[in-house]
Image 1 (cartoon, helix red, strand yellow):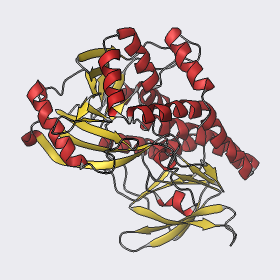
Image 2 (cartoon, one colour):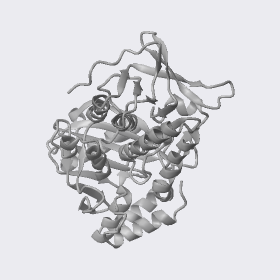
Image 3 (cartoon, helix red, strand yellow):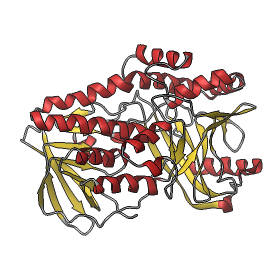
Image 4 (cartoon, helix red, strand yellow):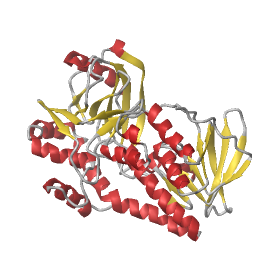
Amino acid sequence: MAIPDTAELGSVERTDVVVVGAGPGGAATAAHLAARGRDVIVLEKDTFPRDKVCGDGLTPRVIRELLDLGLEDEAHGRAPGFKRNRGLRIHGGHTTMELPWPELDDWPNWGGCSTRMVFDETIARTAVERGATLAQGHAVSRPLWRDRAESRVTGVAWRTRDGREGEVHAPVVIAADGAGGPMAKHLGVHRRPERPMAVAARGYYRTPRADDEWISSFLDLTDAEGNLLSGYGWVFPLDDGTMNVGLGLLSTSREFQGVNYRRLLESWSTGMAANGWGTTPDALEGSIRTGPIPMGFNHTPLHQRGVLLVGDSGGMVNPFNGEGISYAMEAAQLAAEVVDAALVTRRTSDLDRYDRELRQRIGGYYTLGRVFAELVGNPTVMHICTTYGMPYRRLMELVLKLMAHLTDQRPADTKDVIVNTLQRLAPAA
């Protein structure tokens, strides 16, 4: 089902909240705010359906967000464009191991896959159905300030491709415009160099193994000469007969600045074809694309002068596994709750709760992830870990819970206790 035609905005609009960007974070924020009865205008520079470089994997954390939005068929893999999976197949050293998603009270025990062409449009359509106004093809050019001292943002200015311009005034702005979006830059929020980031490359391959019930992760990544690289590769099956095949390299690796990511993926996927994956060059559909992955709250503060950063604009990607959709959508739920309350009190300071609570929830976990990123930035360390750790199933079950951030608040087992304790003791990011 397509999104209705884009809204026609006047030259000056007023609303409760203006959201910049209609990706999962922005659209989910709009959906939750609209469900609370708030007037919301979402400005999206592109037109749906539109692509984004991503692995397209949906962890159980994402599945819970879909369920919270009432998207039952999508969450269960029954809707077109959505595929359900059982867990993670890890390849490392000389070992291959299938690890089902854990059985927990707080999270579903299944995951999924959906291309961002389908997924993002689904969340944006949900926001519109709940009452949000979506203006596609409206690129935000700058924030609007209350005074010359730039003490508070009171809206944004926009421009369309055909040259129309206008403004949306609102007491709160949600910046969900991605890693390179303009809002954080206008606020003077720059990437923190001590926080990790990565670059991902991915392509879609038509393959006979697209019906696989597992997503696959490859911990030993090599270039064409067989040299070990830091980072990891993935193969995620989709419901249209293709697989998302990709790789990511961390900024902590020595190769980060000097590698051609497209050629590396071509080389790696061709080598994979020899192992039965069918990822030959002629099976590639479309082109290989690359994109940045901002990790571990690498843009802070998350609230500044009436603007809340959600998703990639705040660097909310998990440093352990490169997954960011769930954290964008979880932040969206919190942002909607905080903004709704602040609109009642009319105190800008009440928005600080968003930054404070997100750090409390996942800041310690992200700090652990930064340590992990530093360690695996050395490919020798990664090779030792995979060679000597992979054969032990109980250890790998603990690693899965840690890297996928899947534990119960009330611990279900010793693994939960270990992960929760580490997360609680680590300083908040």
